[in-house]
Length: 78
Image 1 (cartoon, helix red, strand yellow):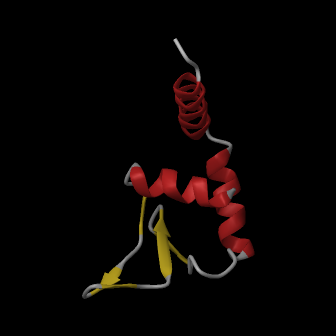
Image 2 (cartoon, helix red, strand yellow; image 1 turned 180 degrees about the horizontal axis):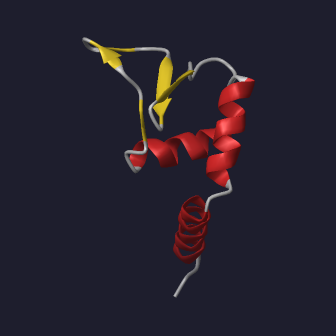
């Protein structure tokens, strides 16, 4: 569930996963704050709280609504 919020942030350039050379580091930067994030492990409670605040924004709600509409319209046969 929180993975969709992270994908939203990364796709809209609101967050980034820093790299050292070709290797991605185990952190994510959101609003100039660094959080520990390893996609293979569970999400920390501090990062979960931040993602919940992002999820409450109107921009994310609009994104989620449009994504749901697109998925629904693809499933319909015209």
